[in-house]
Length: 356
Image 1 (cartoon, rainbow, N blue to C red):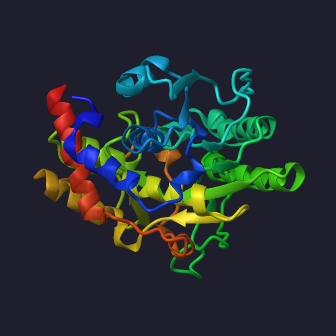
Image 2: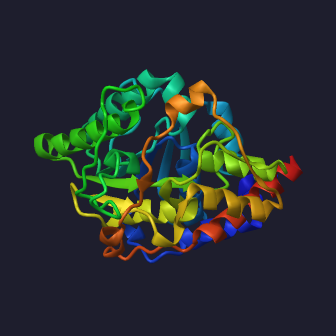
């Protein structure tokens, strides 16, 4: 069973597609999305497809990714539509498309986003967030894009210095740049700075949605984040493996809420501004998160020492809660709390797993 055939997943997609947003900006327009088969990107594409099919949005969707076979399997139900085109693309190369004269909106979602990727491909992690961003920005300038959105991260805030409970968009914590693990947050910071440079020098319209730790049924099997590992354990009927004391206090966002926040920033945000996408109802300590998932799956939490590769990619931040008041002033609010999001994720993933 494909994820887009699952009833719960259909409900999530339909919920976002019904939101009171200025969808007219996308009417008879076009949108290009890098990282289109990822956790956030694939859900976003499904929402836009829903808008085309049900609401007649007539928006051309250009989905960028490295693996055409994977994309074909994921978007098979819409693959032959004249409003959908997959572009096989290495984000670190200039994007040259003679067939695209004008583009509406561009979202750069492609990035390494989990510990093993940071540890095994630190160069690729950095280049995607800097060279990849520049390539997307240059494409926007060349094709007179209406707006560019760079998906940044809660990681840009670094360590909480103990002087604030939640990170607002102006906060700058501490990052030791002289480490391998710093490649991800520092390159995200540089990507944001590059966006500001293109606003000033090229007159480009850019917004920066800052995603927090996102999860949901579109997560990839290769994802090694703690939340993803917990969920994989639950779906497989295994105990939940906690690889630390679990006192890290983080913000999490269910994928439907992450995408609704992303769309709110894209369609309503002010040029040059960054917006945190997070909700207080989904702020939780890692050990409590593990316990919720274990209880939902009818298993227990066990402790395991992480291997060297995993450990090298882990964030050292012990508290990373995001203040989303700025985004809420645009009209956004989360729909699912952490308990609801976890339950939906596990139920959908089990359904897909059982059918396969």
